[in-house]
Amino acid sequence: MKRSEVKNLIISSLGSNSDPREVAGKLEDAGVTYDFSEGFTNKVIGKISSARLVVNRELEFVRNMSSAFYRIALTGVAAIVLLLISIYLMEGSISLNSFLGLGDFSDESIICLLGGN
Amino acid sequence: MESYRKANENELVSASLEGDKLAFGEIVNRYRKMVARTVKGMLGDSVFAEDIGQEVFIRLYHSLAEFRGEAKLATYIQKIAVNLTLNEIKRRKRSFSMFSQKGDDEIYEFDVADHDNEERRDAKEMVTSALMKLDPKFRIVVTMRMLQGYSTKETADALELPQGTVLSRLSRAQKQLKEILEKL
Image (cartoon, rainbow over all chains, first blue to last red; front, side):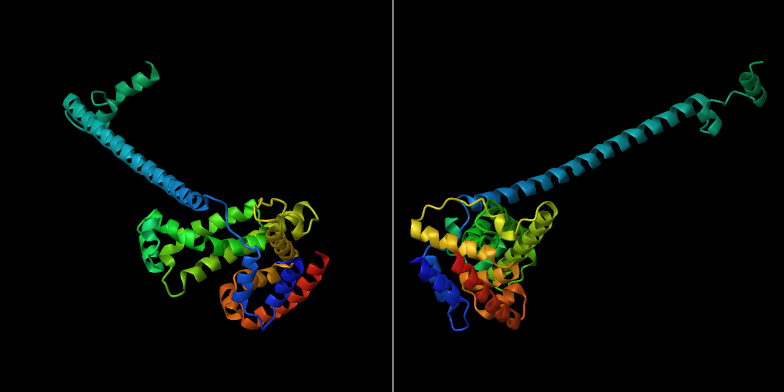
């Protein structure tokens, strides 16, 4: 199609009497076609997959963190229980004084100890 | 994607929602030209248009669950394409007005080589160049009408504009295009 014919087609395509589908078809035949590059579909699928991979990695990280936290919390609780048992066995009670290691001290001896006399 | 070549829209959407990438790939293949006409008609035949095209389908993939099948899938995709393209034009206008006084038609310098014969390439270049010189609000209605072959009603639906507005924009675009094409 010649340049002048394409120009006329473009102008007439916007008129109220024209058939838009027919004009679009004629323009396409004249070479006015648009498409994306080769491999476009694969690029889109690749981007979607990589985005999903990032989300999966984030989820895995959160899952790993909560499992690590769970293990640390369990170990901590076990250590506290062991400490309380050992205090009870050594001091015979689980009072604050025995917990702080002050079970055998009287008030005077603590003052002497702190005062250095 | 051979297995989905004869599948209908609803089957493709359902399969895509279940994570079937072949089904979604078939959707991309079916509608890529339609999206290319809108995006490249509005932004020019550039690498940026390619990125926006990809973004259209990525957005579609993430919003497929919201697609209820009340409208055609093509209309749904077209709306995403129009919105993303208009956003890109706004973004460009902002960044160009910040850094230079260049017009909107001077940024399409990344033409992808086409191996059609010279006459066909000439026709395409002339159409693209004329479109780029149009005001974006006229360019979008002309793209819908001239490249997509949409009727006034279909254009109005896709752009969510009253039919009267579409008709008046088409009429004004026709005048602008006459002047532009005389100089080309």
